[in-house]
Length: 258
Image 1: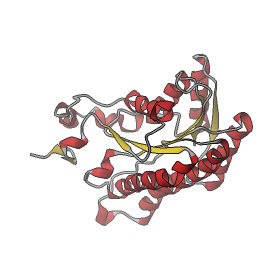
Image 2 (image 1 turned 90 degrees about the horizontal axis):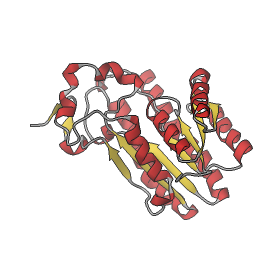
Image 3 (image 1 turned 120 degrees about the vertical axis):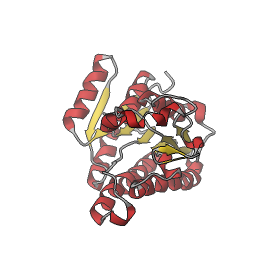
Image 4 (image 1 turned 180 degrees about the horizontal axis):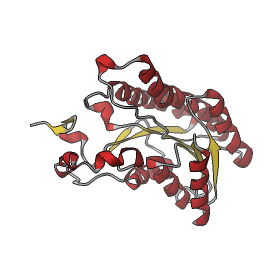
């Protein structure tokens, strides 16, 4: 019960990595606020947790829409009076686009969610945390921000922007007792990329890693619990890879360097 009675918003909290974090936070005693765009998915997550004895709140929110962000903040404040934890997990992975072919529509689509929406959601939550004595803000970045991968420059740029936000916000918000950190997952088995993981041609990615297996949402969730708990009160401005050692192997694309 490391998060007992803490109020935690998890954006994109009903699927993939976000779902894993939502489940872990609920089991650690948090009052979880699930933000996602699809009511059916969000309500299903609430029902799942209720069946396990964990209350949760669903708020429909598309964080690329600033009015939705306002509602996302207001609902938990009405119900719980405070926000202690924010996990900026909502993110968009568009289809791959070589840099020389990436158009404005693809660029704006991924930037509006991954960077702009995340920036303003964090701003709104931080303002509330200052009023209530502090909190924990966690960004879900990606190890792709620190290595090259074909046709991913627009996506990688948003994650690089998040990494920069983390160190700047850690400096600005530290005096208000707000810790700001990031997790940088590698290849994690989630619904959006299930078909890709099932392709035998990519299995070599995992066979040569220090931790030779595919990552699971629970791997990221464990680190997210630590960063949200009092155990990490003296940690801020860091970006922790959660990738089984993928990054230290200095991979590029689908093939390890020789």
